[in-house]
Image (tube, rainbow, N blue to C red; front, side, top):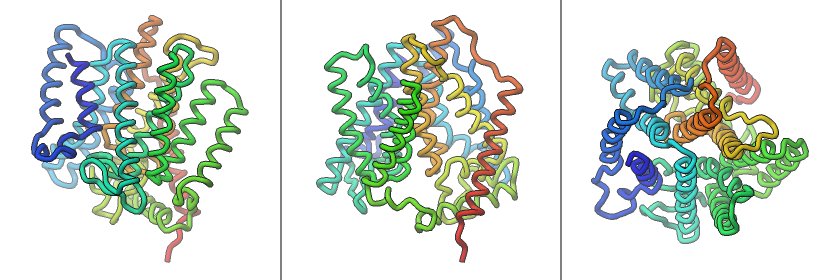
Length: 413
């Protein structure tokens, strides 16, 4: 029952029936399902206890949630509750995945559904591009396709396409996939890649290149694969949408982002530990940071940024598969790593640190790794001093990279 709630929850997030069916706009589908899923989840955990707070990233997510609430205390007292409530959907989706997905069959079911839902979004986008309008009366603007709800931005739409493409590649190349499955996966890949092109999102194209380079390298462990993938990525950027070939520091959009990073740096200097407060970036600068890392350390400070970086650190660490591993879980963990790589690259160009889709992916990675460990009778990973140092070093390195980017690339005047 809880697993069915998860699948339905994902459908409502991606399809957005209240926004595409006339007369349904006042029906709170997601809120109703959230309440039902929460109640069913409590019953499921009480009836059959299951581990869902045993991984470091589980605890880091809760700490990040607390950091978001604490950061708002300096802005307005009731902001603690408002910001805590605003970040509830990503936390809810994360733990819904962690609790509901309990075996490999259910894991595959979630992945297949995500691919199908992205094919739906892609087909809608292709129709929108060719007719000028799609479901929900969303129109093409500046030759870029949009979705509804949380995908009402071509960059968001492109990021979710990038997230599932490694899974489609896995279905195409997995020896255990049948001919029909491979044909369906090939068709899905063509549709999703076409829609990704129509988003005209530079971040999505870079994320796609990073995801596929990571996927093929982890699959073959060959340097020649990286060279080929990088060459293919350059070809995509040159032959891709017009905006893709305009990636340079002097271009107006790029300069706007660099200068937003500079403002984020100043926010960090003024409030290093807890930031300027959740959802307060645009109170100090007219546009968002267009970088999830910058946006995070600006709004929730070093404490929140440590938790944010730590979640991704553990995502990749527990998904690491030894060279030559041939167990059933190995291909899925590689695909998840590639998916995470693509999403991280997209997030470097987008402020998407609070959206549910990202945390759904983090939850899938945590769940897959935990199930693999259980099947091999391995203990759950625990945080060591070295892990804390590594996360801190990544955090510091990222901040230094942002600072150097500002110093070198910003054009003032």
